[in-house]
Length: 113
Image (cartoon, rainbow, N blue to C red; front, side):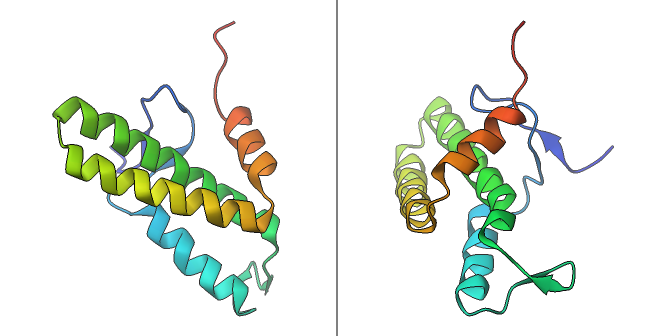
């Protein structure tokens, strides 16, 4: 059995993530390195486009956490997750990657047909 799980949410069903990792924090760290020209992926300096999968995992995880928190009635937790989702959206807007992230999530979400 793998520790990676498929996200069982209405937001996405195919993007795999490790539920033990806070993908939003991981993205923030990568973004900080990227902004300081210190992020290298595959031995080369990273581009904005290479941040898209990290952003998608963070967004899907935050949305899933919000749904789970509402189901449990943990509204303080939900409020913090919504604030983090807002910060993530601000960062994505600054990078001008909203369309790319949306496309990535859509490409990795199965259709009903």
